[in-house]
Image (cartoon, rainbow, N blue to C red; front, side, top):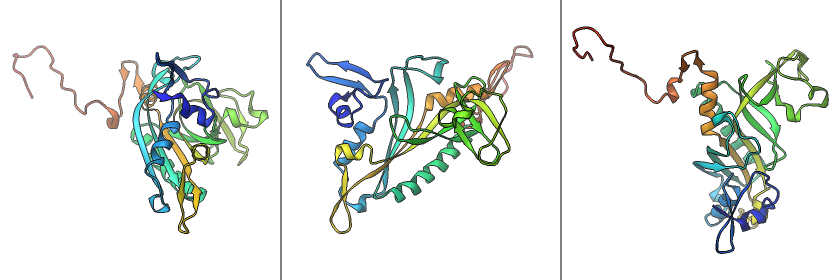
Length: 269
């Protein structure tokens, strides 16, 4: 439960459409946490004082709640889901950019170890920032549409140029970067990263003192992995007619012993 006042500070009490709002019997209102910028920044404010404290990051793994208009596809889109989110804090946009790239590479490794060939796709930042990057796993069951090319170009349909907006999965087009064939596929979003800059530090007045003792605003980054959605994505891309094929890194166990009927009844190990 997050106090209404924190969400009013950032202007998102009315601006975040999927916010679950909970009234208490003591005339207070709360939000069920869909994301935690409004909580993390005031907490960090109690511990951040000097440029010597930066950069640093904090993370959590817990349940999120969003009042989705059309929940569907089991774990892929629900009103209650698991997420790992990470927030980083910096003295400058340049420091943020370096840290952002480190986290981007770390996330690529995480998804690879899970058996997911996730593309880093440029996207709109929505309520969080102007632009972001999504980690998308190509799958026919995905509800996003990704335009991608072997040259490294990858964007979702939302921020593609107007001439691409009418294209659907399987259509043919030319890559705007290299001119080669552009592939268009359905995909499942399993993570996203944002350079928040000062979007949330400014409303709360999150500042630090620089080497000269002057107060300066903190720059922030945000990085999330949908843990339950990622598990659903693994199932969508790793199965056969008999069921799920878990990649070893995320399998519940490495060996499953089966005892078959017949023989002389002795148990063999």
